[in-house]
Image 1 (cartoon, rainbow, N blue to C red):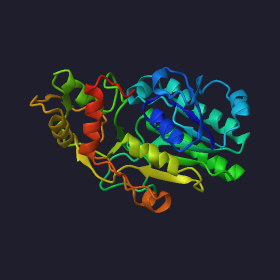
Image 2: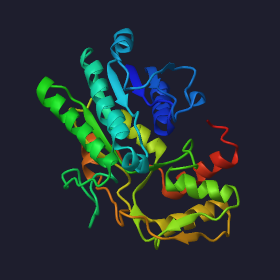
Image 3: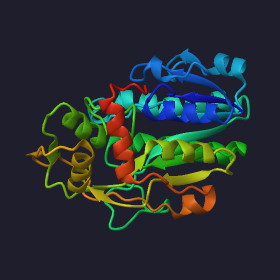
Length: 305
């Protein structure tokens, strides 16, 4: 297939690009390189340095994509709170631009949404039919973008798909700044520093390996529209995660503790049964195995960039 991947120089996007190339697809990456890195993009893919907030029609007319995997995003929850207009500009209006450019070529769009920021506090693993109650502008923007995909499906008979990712981790994730907790923990341990745990560490998340997420994203191609959770269906507390990180790092460093962060969810869990039934997707990579691969990447000087 001819596939455009927005955000294809980013953490998840670059793994998706590699998976597409491995099966023989013709891939064009659209990335502003604001947070993505040029060196992550395989030489076998074409890279167009461009922001999704800029007009995409000329590029799409040249590439004539059959599918668009839309992973470009403003992905920092704190930035969304501090600068909600910027967040909505990228995550909502950028998505509309992608949809409009794709519509000219009848290209299916697969959109990277969020599970953790979508469902709010969970009493049990949340299915896709659960109430959506995002509390951050980031989650609100992702939900608004999902509604645009659904609306286009109704209006134009398209088959766009939204994937609600769990807490994705793995090689190429930046351990600096606002990053996933796995990258932060392992990055600190690699530097001989004590990772910081906010609150009591009992808060849970669904940690899913980036290779599995890339596979699920490809499996969404050709589906007849819909919204699907992408995770493991398993909850792991921050304290449990830290112990696993310490084990793979062979470290005896103790964490430091800080006050709980305002508004942080205590329990976030995804029900992945619909994804298994409809996409045939089940996460293969065990959490500890994924942590070990991530640790190897960090300690080998990020040689796998």
